[in-house]
Length: 187
Image (cartoon, rainbow, N blue to C red; front, side):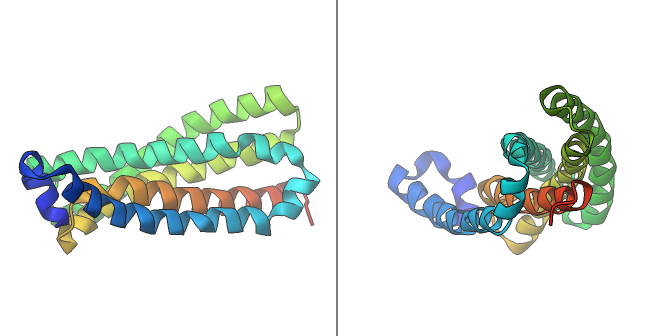
Protein backbone atom coordinates (compact mmCIF):
# COMPACT_ATOMS: atom_id res chain seq x y z
CA UNK A 1 0.00 0.00 0.00
CA UNK A 2 2.89 2.37 0.69
CA UNK A 3 4.18 2.04 -2.86
CA UNK A 4 0.68 2.46 -4.29
CA UNK A 5 0.20 5.69 -2.37
CA UNK A 6 2.35 7.67 -4.77
CA UNK A 7 1.09 6.05 -7.97
CA UNK A 8 -2.66 6.28 -7.34
CA UNK A 9 -2.92 9.32 -5.08
CA UNK A 10 -5.61 11.20 -7.03
CA UNK A 11 -7.90 8.18 -7.28
CA UNK A 12 -7.68 7.13 -3.62
CA UNK A 13 -10.12 8.15 -0.90
CA UNK A 14 -8.75 10.32 1.90
CA UNK A 15 -9.67 7.63 4.45
CA UNK A 16 -7.49 5.07 2.62
CA UNK A 17 -4.53 7.45 2.51
CA UNK A 18 -4.99 8.46 6.15
CA UNK A 19 -5.11 4.80 7.22
CA UNK A 20 -1.73 4.11 5.64
CA UNK A 21 -0.12 7.29 6.89
CA UNK A 22 -1.35 6.91 10.45
CA UNK A 23 0.31 3.51 10.75
CA UNK A 24 3.75 5.01 10.15
CA UNK A 25 3.05 8.12 12.21
CA UNK A 26 1.90 5.99 15.15
CA UNK A 27 5.19 4.11 15.05
CA UNK A 28 7.07 7.41 15.01
CA UNK A 29 5.07 8.77 17.95
CA UNK A 30 6.00 5.67 19.91
CA UNK A 31 9.64 6.19 18.93
CA UNK A 32 9.40 9.82 20.10
CA UNK A 33 8.83 8.56 23.63
CA UNK A 34 12.58 7.86 23.61
CA UNK A 35 13.25 11.61 23.42
CA UNK A 36 11.38 12.07 26.68
CA UNK A 37 13.22 9.15 28.25
CA UNK A 38 16.54 10.64 27.17
CA UNK A 39 15.63 14.03 28.64
CA UNK A 40 14.67 12.32 31.88
CA UNK A 41 17.90 10.32 32.01
CA UNK A 42 19.93 13.51 31.52
CA UNK A 43 17.83 15.63 33.90
CA UNK A 44 20.86 15.87 36.21
CA UNK A 45 22.66 17.78 33.43
CA UNK A 46 19.69 20.10 32.92
CA UNK A 47 19.51 20.69 36.68
CA UNK A 48 23.23 21.54 36.75
CA UNK A 49 23.19 23.83 33.71
CA UNK A 50 19.64 25.03 33.05
CA UNK A 51 20.87 26.98 30.01
CA UNK A 52 21.33 23.66 28.19
CA UNK A 53 17.55 23.58 27.76
CA UNK A 54 17.56 26.86 25.81
CA UNK A 55 19.32 25.31 22.82
CA UNK A 56 17.53 21.96 22.54
CA UNK A 57 14.83 23.18 20.10
CA UNK A 58 17.43 24.91 17.91
CA UNK A 59 19.62 21.81 17.68
CA UNK A 60 16.82 19.29 17.17
CA UNK A 61 14.92 21.42 14.64
CA UNK A 62 18.01 22.23 12.60
CA UNK A 63 19.08 18.60 12.54
CA UNK A 64 15.61 17.51 11.45
CA UNK A 65 15.52 20.20 8.78
CA UNK A 66 18.92 19.18 7.41
CA UNK A 67 17.92 15.52 7.34
CA UNK A 68 14.57 16.06 5.64
CA UNK A 69 16.17 18.42 3.14
CA UNK A 70 18.68 15.72 2.16
CA UNK A 71 15.86 13.16 2.05
CA UNK A 72 13.78 15.38 -0.25
CA UNK A 73 16.71 15.67 -2.64
CA UNK A 74 17.15 11.88 -2.59
CA UNK A 75 13.44 11.18 -3.10
CA UNK A 76 13.47 13.51 -6.10
CA UNK A 77 16.68 11.90 -7.39
CA UNK A 78 15.14 8.44 -7.07
CA UNK A 79 11.95 9.57 -8.82
CA UNK A 80 13.83 11.12 -11.76
CA UNK A 81 16.32 8.26 -12.03
CA UNK A 82 19.25 10.56 -11.27
CA UNK A 83 20.04 8.44 -8.19
CA UNK A 84 19.79 4.67 -8.12
CA UNK A 85 19.91 2.06 -5.40
CA UNK A 86 23.44 1.14 -6.52
CA UNK A 87 24.58 4.69 -5.68
CA UNK A 88 23.84 4.44 -1.95
CA UNK A 89 27.42 4.61 -0.62
CA UNK A 90 28.54 7.22 -3.15
CA UNK A 91 25.57 9.36 -2.12
CA UNK A 92 26.20 8.90 1.61
CA UNK A 93 29.88 9.87 1.20
CA UNK A 94 28.88 12.97 -0.74
CA UNK A 95 26.22 13.92 1.82
CA UNK A 96 28.74 13.36 4.63
CA UNK A 97 30.96 16.04 3.09
CA UNK A 98 27.97 18.30 2.45
CA UNK A 99 26.78 17.72 6.02
CA UNK A 100 30.13 18.72 7.48
CA UNK A 101 30.22 21.87 5.35
CA UNK A 102 26.68 22.88 6.29
CA UNK A 103 27.22 21.77 9.89
CA UNK A 104 30.27 24.01 10.27
CA UNK A 105 28.39 27.05 8.94
CA UNK A 106 25.35 26.40 11.13
CA UNK A 107 27.58 25.41 14.04
CA UNK A 108 29.35 28.77 13.90
CA UNK A 109 26.00 30.57 13.81
CA UNK A 110 24.74 28.53 16.78
CA UNK A 111 28.04 29.09 18.59
CA UNK A 112 27.76 32.87 18.16
CA UNK A 113 24.14 32.82 19.35
CA UNK A 114 25.09 30.77 22.41
CA UNK A 115 27.99 33.10 23.18
CA UNK A 116 25.76 36.17 22.96
CA UNK A 117 23.06 34.61 25.14
CA UNK A 118 25.19 32.81 27.73
CA UNK A 119 28.80 34.02 27.58
CA UNK A 120 29.97 30.58 28.72
CA UNK A 121 32.68 29.34 26.33
CA UNK A 122 32.15 25.66 27.24
CA UNK A 123 28.40 25.86 26.71
CA UNK A 124 29.08 27.71 23.46
CA UNK A 125 31.44 24.95 22.32
CA UNK A 126 28.88 22.32 23.31
CA UNK A 127 26.18 23.96 21.18
CA UNK A 128 28.48 24.50 18.18
CA UNK A 129 29.93 20.99 18.25
CA UNK A 130 26.52 19.39 18.67
CA UNK A 131 25.23 21.35 15.68
CA UNK A 132 28.09 20.16 13.46
CA UNK A 133 27.69 16.52 14.48
CA UNK A 134 23.88 16.55 14.32
CA UNK A 135 23.69 18.17 10.88
CA UNK A 136 26.35 15.82 9.51
CA UNK A 137 24.57 12.73 10.83
CA UNK A 138 21.20 14.05 9.67
CA UNK A 139 22.31 14.64 6.07
CA UNK A 140 23.85 11.16 5.92
CA UNK A 141 20.67 9.62 7.29
CA UNK A 142 18.57 11.76 4.96
CA UNK A 143 20.45 10.47 1.96
CA UNK A 144 20.59 6.84 3.12
CA UNK A 145 17.04 6.08 4.26
CA UNK A 146 15.13 6.97 1.07
CA UNK A 147 17.40 4.72 -0.99
CA UNK A 148 17.04 1.87 1.49
CA UNK A 149 13.25 2.26 1.64
CA UNK A 150 13.09 2.24 -2.15
CA UNK A 151 15.17 -0.96 -2.14
CA UNK A 152 12.79 -2.54 0.39
CA UNK A 153 9.76 -1.63 -1.73
CA UNK A 154 8.40 1.16 0.47
CA UNK A 155 7.54 4.66 -0.70
CA UNK A 156 10.52 6.72 0.51
CA UNK A 157 8.49 9.94 0.36
CA UNK A 158 6.01 8.59 2.89
CA UNK A 159 8.41 7.27 5.51
CA UNK A 160 11.74 9.09 5.21
CA UNK A 161 10.94 12.56 6.60
CA UNK A 162 9.17 11.53 9.81
CA UNK A 163 11.63 8.72 10.55
CA UNK A 164 14.63 10.96 9.96
CA UNK A 165 13.22 13.64 12.26
CA UNK A 166 12.56 11.08 14.98
CA UNK A 167 16.01 9.46 14.76
CA UNK A 168 17.75 12.84 14.57
CA UNK A 169 15.88 14.12 17.64
CA UNK A 170 16.94 11.12 19.70
CA UNK A 171 20.54 11.18 18.43
CA UNK A 172 20.86 14.94 18.87
CA UNK A 173 19.84 14.77 22.52
CA UNK A 174 22.35 12.02 23.33
CA UNK A 175 25.17 13.82 21.47
CA UNK A 176 24.30 17.16 23.11
CA UNK A 177 24.20 15.86 26.66
CA UNK A 178 27.29 13.69 26.28
CA UNK A 179 29.29 16.63 24.92
CA UNK A 180 27.89 18.86 27.70
CA UNK A 181 28.85 16.35 30.39
CA UNK A 182 32.43 16.23 29.13
CA UNK A 183 32.98 19.90 28.26
CA UNK A 184 31.06 21.40 31.17
CA UNK A 185 32.29 18.83 33.68
CA UNK A 186 28.80 17.79 34.75
CA UNK A 187 28.79 14.77 37.04
